[in-house]
Image (cartoon, one colour):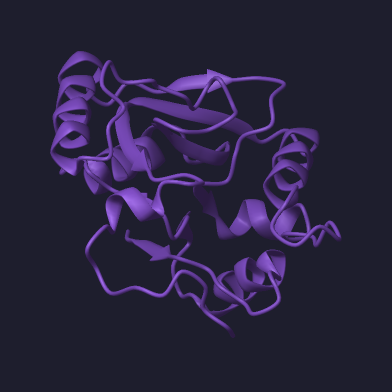
Amino acid sequence: MWIDTKIAYEPGRQLAYAYNRAMENTQAEWVLFIDQDLFLVSKHWYKLCLNAIEKVGHNAGWITARCNRIVCRHQLYTPPKDSDDIKDHIEVAEELYKKYGDKIIEVRKTKFSGFFILTSKSAWKTVGGFRDQGKGLSKVDNDYCIRLQQAKFKLYVLPGLYCYHLGKGKWNTVWKGWDIPQKIKV
């Protein structure tokens, strides 16, 4: 078994279309979608995902991680020092891994944020894929999450898997000194 990892993109902020295209074109049963501003700072991330799939994959609709900047409280872990230094977040990831290992927590009646979506092709097919919500990037994740729960799939969080999420308004701090245009026209 293997996990196809994707950073989905489509011009015009058509995220649902990009997710669906990725699912249609993969040979893998499991796909991990991550945001373009997410850093997989845990060296254990792939192993934790494989272990989770092995343990709960038969009924999982969505398996997710925790990160520093997100709205969903089940996915949020605020580190003592939420700096933009990757080294700080690598340390946090290691601490959480040591504390929780490959523990899996089922979460009910929630709307996950889509920074880290580990989902199966069969769950995706069952709910009819991702749907455009008419708001570009917004609400595609919430809609998918709700439909998974309605179809009796379960949602899981891996508390031992921490990612650094750059989040809004932090690009200038992290990339200071790099010659990167502030706005890119597509």
